[in-house]
Image (tube, rainbow, N blue to C red; front, side, top):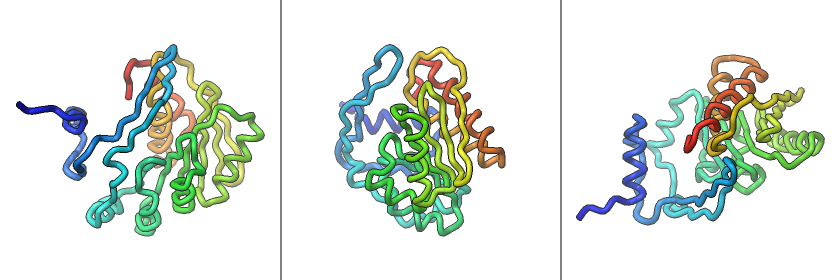
Length: 216
């Protein structure tokens, strides 16, 4: 009898969303898994099992493929930080999501080779957050953006700070809010729009995501 594994389910879902899976690596072992609980619409991340991601590495052909794009985005747990210098040297822009730990070892490796850096922090006051953003910017990124949940977002381009309120919405499920914000911001930035416009698009995109159940 055929047994459907988590890896099989992931592949089927990607195909259903018309995502090209020809370059997906399938390694023997458990899939990466993060436990999530919902509390009144707000997602709370629990235990994380890295599974086969612990052994993940980009292949030579992967690096050549990625270097052909305008922009590559990766994140804190993507296991790709050590390749960013090489990818960026080809002229490809780099975006990095530091989650809520931008100064972890992976972040410290990635930030010097990053054009757009993102992280989340809704616990700090404005002054402390500006210092944190400035510290990240000093490592190399052209633009650093901090998402703050219900407080909106704050960005820095090396010269000035930009503040953007959240877009009004009914919160159903906050899962994927940060990822959606980043997607909206990057799309608009690649279109040559201003930082303020990028932040506004990011906020609107996030609002559309958290207004739906199980959006990620």
